[in-house]
Image (cartoon, rainbow, N blue to C red; front, side, top):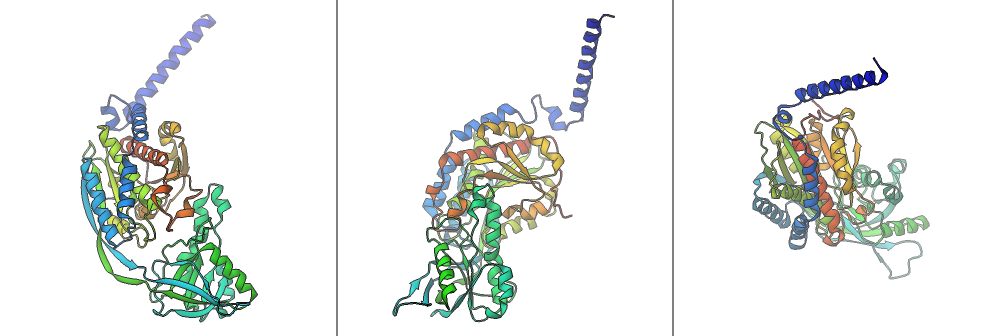
Length: 489
């Protein structure tokens, strides 16, 4: 046998082995893949979805409806009720199967909010200084005439405990800055978490030590003398007036306090009314396989009351709506049902997420995956994924299709704890979240500046494209992802 003949025979054997492996692999795939003459997730279809999304402003128009025509949508408010109706009608109009899931939600009303510095070292006679602040959700009220007390400036929980004897009868100010350098380095979520824990837990800790009120420096990296609200929490039987002050006013109080005793007159008159009736909006595009699972794409419908909730979370919920609209308009039918959920009450209670979980806790195996967008309207860079390490390779074709969008990154984690998806995630449902540029997100988050003009239409188109491509891919992939890493059986 000549050398060339041996090489030729070896090549033939290699081709035969490769063909046998290919046939064996194909035989082992799901019945869905075997039934289809095309790949389970056709790259050309992903390209078509991307192109359609990048040429559509349907989602932006819905965002304009939600923000400019309704405005703030805090749970229990007329705005929240109007948003439920508006989103349901928009999804019915594109041909989705729409249902409203009843949810009992908190009904908290802000009331009056005012503060001024009335005593401090070197204060000229007759001079007081206004402090710009906004009440935190869950705060209790001062008397209608307000309270006057000395301000104790605290820079950490450790310092609070070290100075516990000084807290009783005082207004505690948690002066903890937001780390904008960390946010600029691509870690805005981590920067937020470090500062926001003082908003969520600080007032409760101060109340237990005898404080008469708690203030916190707003969680933001921008200094435009604009306060940023958010929710706070108290243990049962604990309550306290609590507010967020602008970063400039927090720094002013820290400087004045360093020179001598500082006193404030504070008035906050929020009310917690009886729980209100509301709804999650659920819109389905049924899959071709009635026995197949569900893929959720979602955002939350409620917003804080200071502004219009364009980036938190109007962009997220309308991007989810837009993703389904694109798939429906292209005449595509997924194998698995794609379900849009506009969650109610993410901001101050999570009641919508809990209601959905409670209604589906015995059917979690039928939920293949869940996506929520709740990180603003920045340029998409890829996706976060709470999946097992061995499942990452399953998404290589999707990452390739996302490359022209500039969004091929996948950041895997054991858990995302993304707002409304947390109960599902802990129940084992693999969870995903668009990875968005958030360098400036916390400039506007939970503030009066969260308005439509902060949303760049091209970035929203890209987010729609990302969510549409992700949901289509998940709804048709033949492989099982496996239960989420933090599954709690």
